[in-house]
Image 1 (cartoon, one colour):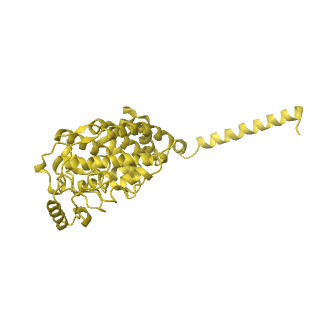
Image 2 (cartoon, one colour):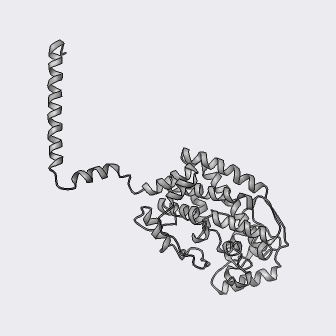
Image 3 (cartoon, one colour):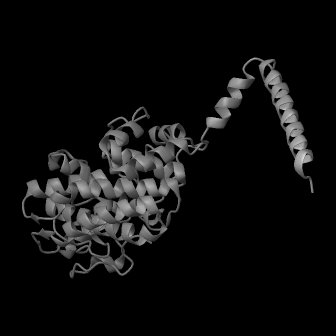
Length: 337
């Protein structure tokens, strides 16, 4: 043990040695290769490839318009091209284009990877929903529903927050009596603005397009994605109705499925996002309970079979033998896997 004056002398010597070493280090830094000190400082402040995704997630957690706007500004966007029908298992028309540009700008090195979505793809979907309100730009709703339920981490929380935010904003158009084309259009527009992979038919009809000008494969009566949504757990079945009221029932079935996916994915969210999601879900679920729609009879079997034949000839199967019943019941495997 060092005692008394010996201890003080040892401490003083150590201090002198420390100062000498720091002076030498300072001199070495000053005479280093040009730019070394600046590079070192920048590397200390770097947050890594997830920084922009984290910023988006944090802005959505704040639930404040200004940081959300700032976190979604300056990224590439998708041209407002005409919606197209996407066959099951096929990439969306924007996957390798504008969506990959957004993913890369967010920090991805692989572009847009939606099946299954990685952090950058989930964040891309979150940005498109938040900034553009165009869920139809993202194909294949079931893949996104699975991600809402089972994704874990920054990008996936950003997607949950973006979807919940837009659904809560659209809740007034959903939670009411939907009994004419105007209220049906508003409901479809709220769905497609909030839910990634939403059917482009909902965007067309929700934006007021004349049904006579819509391509046959995207019309309410012939769209494969409307057909798929009608078969979901709480949909009225593939043979339901015609026109706007057929399409809006498909959109509402997707809304309910998305609400359920958010609720099931809630335990996987980090604490900050989870608190915001719980508040948004309270608004969304209250609106869902208020849904009231005009009910139509199911489409006659002969018409349904004709629709199936036309789609089969075009290479898009929308009917299986069990779909052709007249009871309008959803198939047992309806909904997201």
